[in-house]
Image (cartoon, rainbow, N blue to C red; front, side):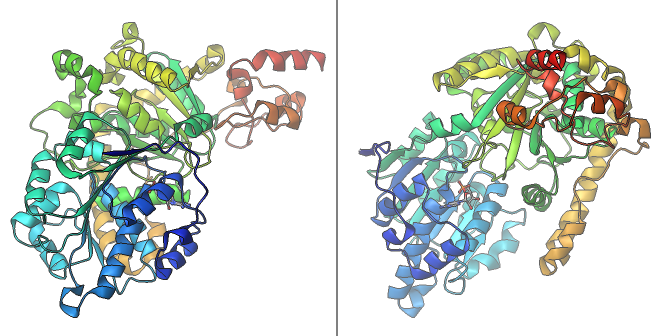
Length: 595
Ligand code: AMP
């Protein structure tokens, strides 16, 4: 087995150096892919030379193009050499763990096929459509099939497809999730329908025991690429954590979002679906709009929400991270978890066996999905595994962009004090946090405390309490039902009408107000007596103290600020963080005195 130590500095390469078809090169130029990324410059030549590859590659590294460009190149070549009869055949299978990822991969590959779309067809059969209805899509023998393992296993068993003589490449993307999502049986089935010889690529964000098993099962004499990008990533990510009670999470998130202490787009992770609605309804009380994203929503809606978020239409997505429900675990702690966590690892509202709601077990949001330009990831509920923490924070600080993460950790003694807003996973926050901190320390990263002046925040408590009272269990239930109904309708419309009229999609919003109660106007604005006392800040000071994701004070003088007796909703861009953020408040106060 060859191991390629990829940390050595290689000469910079261009896409032209790989001998790719001119139609591919034109498509890359249209996509503005000027240079190959690190994974691409390693994977593409090896793949084109026929090697099996196991690569550690995370979302955002350019892994999709890294494996799909050689696949496309191989197929174009094979088609040129093939006689008419064998020119249409399924030559590549791309397996992914979730429907979202299948949609995303298909879309990305289609962009690379733009100048050869008549020659080469790709289909995605991971959708909800029943196997029998998808049969005609496969009858045409698409060159590339993107799918989840369960879907293609069902097709192969139903003999809707025969790839025994035609398959040349098998790709498994997010390989570390494939077994942990329970696809092992499907995978065994799939392998029994494959030819004896084919080339395989495994892409994985982490090298786990599951990946090791897959490697043994699938790869032949593979090249292993352990690409070290982490150091750069860490430099761009600032990690914060706040220790507070369960109720103070609501208080702080209200203050942080309402005062825009974090600027730009945020993903707020929660650990169960009801909580996503609780948080959405709570924020609605202050006219802070957000979209929820969870496995209950139809795939089309989910995909559309992410697409629009990426375009900048929404600022906040409240995503339910349901990985723990699929059994994702930290391997080194597995035995410990098995022994004591069964009862609490599933959020209470999710663990009822007879859940009547239709849930999509192939949903996944903290992994693989290409969220673009995310300024901050907020772990409103702390993840239940260290692995999940890594994947969540990986949604920000991608490419050469900086980002921040902010995690709420509830100390054990404060867990369960406020039954109405309690989340069962919180009981283990400190235990999981200790693992996360250790893991980050080993990578050379620190998680800083997010320091702020609690006295200033206290003024907002009354409003927070008022808003929280309005978000009753009944309101959550109603909102959840309303949203699912609304999105099923949206989804149907998305499918039919909007396919032909893509511009109309702009009128279809996913962040509609869900709460039936009227929002009281006084909750919308922040009166000036509640505004944290902020100080004069010069332009120079802004750049000196600028940190990722924070809004800085743009007022011209402290006097001016005090005179302006307008509410926050009317006056823009004050920077209360000046007095909240660590280490800066003293300096500012000194400056004020001298002035
Ligand atoms: P992936 O890691 O495959 O999810 O890709 C992450 C993002 O990087 C996608 O939005 C791609 O369009 C983009 N991308 C991939 N390769 C390149 C490249 N060589 N240059 C610029 N952007 C790229």
